[in-house]
Image (cartoon, rainbow, N blue to C red):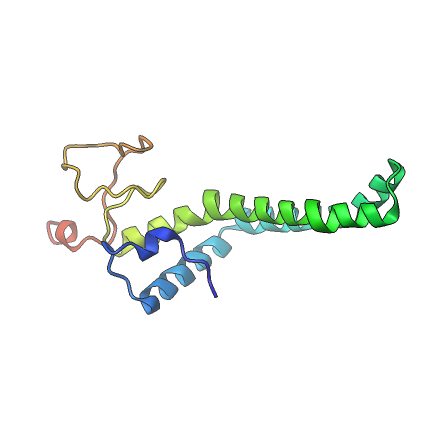
Length: 147
């Protein structure tokens, strides 16, 4: 079961389950099309595997028994590293792609923080949350027909 960002369940977007899955699939496709994301992912996987390989030996060298070293590794360090990596990828890389996909559907969001800019006047040039410059929505039919 995919993990939906809270913003996709917001009633103002009026997305059904099929539309949410399609939007997430397109955001994932964008994520894997960016070589720096794939490289970063591979580096973190390598570091996690190195930690699994070398942490028990280092804990044993510090005087921990083999059982304690294994328990510390498997019950504390590895799950915390997994959660930290998931949070970093999700919050700082993937959510921005979800916001961009919502913008292509015509929703007025800040592409950086996801703040809804719909109620702001058009004269407001920056996002009030993060200060990002407000740009034209890619899939907005109202602005596309004005061309």
